[in-house]
Amino acid sequence: MIILLLGLFWNTALAQEQGFVYVDKQVQIVTDLSNSQDRFQSFAYIVQVKDSDGVTVSLGWITGSLSPNQHLSPALSWTPEKAGAYVAEIFVWDSITNPEPLSPPLQLEIEVRENIEHEG
Image 1 (tube, rainbow, N blue to C red):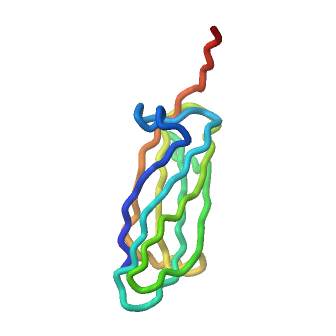
Image 2 (spheres, rainbow, N blue to C red):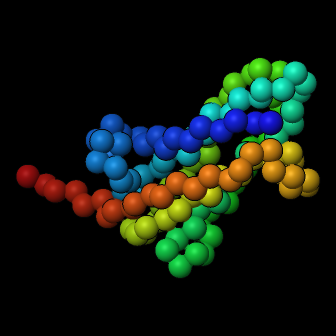
């Protein structure tokens, strides 16, 4: 069994405090994985970001292996191109070719706003 804890880390502390991210600013979608078994466990960490219409705008994955009782915090980056409401769906499978879930999927809502720079 893999235990998941989810977090979203932005490039700037200001965005994190405000609870949203900006267009064209990279974000890291990070999940804490923990292998509570007494054996090695291969995994595929998959992040799919969908827009408000349910269209996938980003899909990425990292594969690896966790030692017994090992903790790992994989991160996948995403740079939003348009403002709006998005949902990141996070999956941890045995592998990309064997989509056997190692943990229930997680969802993370992400609000993206226009990046308006003020001169002055």
